View 1 (tube, protein in one colour):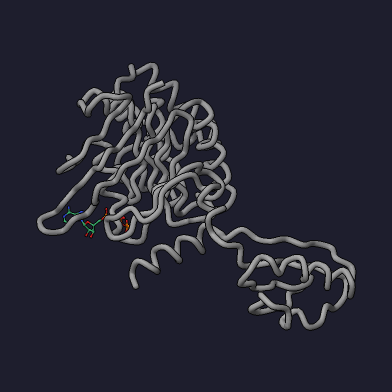
View 2: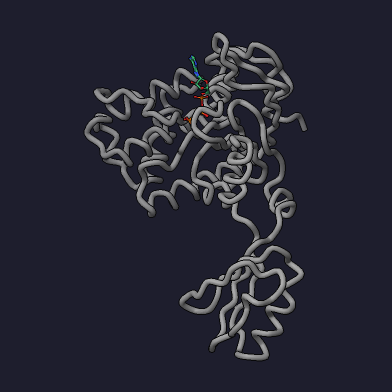
Length: 301
Ligand SMILES: Nc1ncnc2c1ncn2[C@@H]1O[C@H](COP(=O)(O)OP(=O)(O)OP(=O)(O)O)[C@@H](O)[C@H]1O
């Protein structure tokens, strides 16, 4: 099957400034791809190039193996970080207008909008103006505007910002469902826990350059494990004296142990079992947050 979205050494400059330097990535059907980076790293510029709103100075972007053409825009959906809807216009007028612009008939647009409003349990918003809605509900309408025409390629920039935890879960479930239906989703956010939950592959940008790229599980395996969680019924003394232990922190239910060498894990477990009863023992993987700070931090130094 042809890859729905492929970027090959894509480059963009604004005057002297390189905003995106040779980014390459591909998003398969049924995949949520994480595009991460510090502020100003080049994420929005990349997304705008994918959408055909600005053109790359070099490199290629292919959609199902073909270069950009105006008709392709109908197959794409975009939720921008800043609000993209007009405050004074009614939800129904605005979203149906956008759906028709992207190739739907009035009847299809009507049906799809009603479906999404029901799905988000806000059918009454049909007649409301955007400015009458709370920030979080405006975000939901922005999401509907991005997906109403059933795009094959969906670009989400901070999709869950401004939403309460219940609505975050609702939208997350929706994004997963769209993925399972085969949509290719380019997902940009600063919220690493969302990336951990949703994305299979990621690219981390820093000052226009790709600093880390690949399968998230594989990336995590490449980073050393530096923390052990140990829960015991009683005290375990002298953990900090073991070779390879850097720091021991007492927690509510046990200990968080910072290690420099994972080989020390065995000695920790043995000691804990000798002196107490072990309820939980875990050699923790680094979080994406830790990896991000490590990569982006190192490059800045
Ligand atoms: N139209 C433009 N003209 C000049 N410079 C631009 C333009 N758009 C972006 N830039 C510059 O390109 C770089 C990348 O910006 P971009 O908006 O893509 O970053 P970002 O990763 O989306 O950041 P954030 O996380 O803050 O949204 C920045 O240095 C920015 O100032």
